Image 1: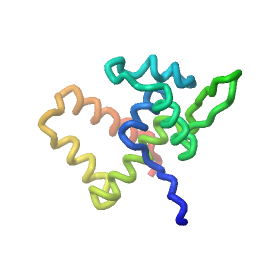
Image 2: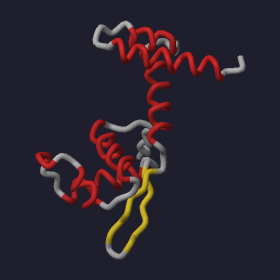
Image 3: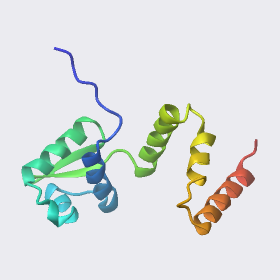
Amino acid sequence: MRQKKKSEFLTEVELEFMTVLWQIGRGTVRDLIAKLAADRNLAYTSVATIMRILEQKNFVTSVKEGKTFVYTPVLAKDAYQSRSLKDLSAKLFDDTPASLVARLVDDDGLSEEALEEIRALLDRRLKNDPD
């Protein structure tokens, strides 16, 4: 039987769980349930299953405290953001980050304030780059 490849990317549900875990730093299944949308009505076992999957995929680690597992992110949120953007750039923008940024800034939905923030970030990056 072929072993399933561990994904380096999160599903939508996994990302939702990781976002909560990144916010709280570490937590139990009950901590996650308390932070996730109340209207979701998630079963304890469903959340525990997702957390086990995240651990198998090496996104979280766990330690047993009493009868409860406490989960901690292995990968920082900014590291996952970088990984995801590189993948998006490679797959959708022909591995050309400038194309990705161009699509973003050409979006009519961006406010003047958002565009100024982007400009300030670029200016700062250019001033700190020795190249």
